[in-house]
Length: 368
Image (cartoon, rainbow, N blue to C red):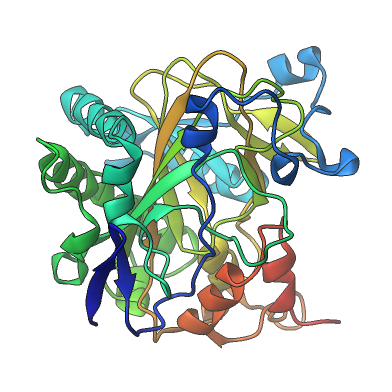
């Protein structure tokens, strides 16, 4: 793939990748320039605005499951049952005692913050290519008319090593590459252990998903949500589900922003210091024949404080055909609920659309 630099921005000459996103103004730049009101393109339609969330009593009573990862990795039956229920009923859970050192978590957060503190023209050197979604910018921007999210991001292919494109990495930023490398390797170990436990729960051998999927690849999306003067009008990230296999999220310890949709209500995910948030993504929902849920979620903003997060998306090889596993199909009681589809075709379908809940998974469901 050939790259060239134009006006301080990296551009791709060719190569489809997973799709593309139209360039838009940096939200951080809008805030820095002391905007007087939220620009119209960021104001959600009245019916879509995040102002309507569950009551405080409901929020207090509902929290996503918390799993002790160290016990899960040892095969503890109680934690394994908790994982099974979390994936069936919530699609989200937090993990403690995951083995990623606190120093690594803190260094990763510091590296992200340092990147987004760079001058705009410096960040633009790592802008998304004209026909790809890796680099600095915004994702899922597919038209000039759609509503935009109150978020800037940088997305990097982190694993396997040979698929990294260092043109998008700020190598001149001290410690950034080392922090992302170390964190990405550690969090991938977490994803692989969860994958192994899901294999057993889906009725196959511990390495069954690994043999079926191959080595999981990883894309790291680092998000920056600036404060917003009217947080009830905008989304940090619009409602969606993730297109990969598993997502492991590192979020701020003291700023709530992530919300998940559970039984029709939006429930905030309250940060637990040094914990990681894990969610089932679309490929696992399809492989499990709908038993495990890839749950709709969104991010909101606040008036006073910026928020950062890092989502590590574990995904299968582009050429793999995904579909319900034989062990998860039981005709006539539970026939196949999803069509088989090549992963690259599915993910391009996901990324070619504005984020809109679970619409893309509906497209591969078998209509009955």
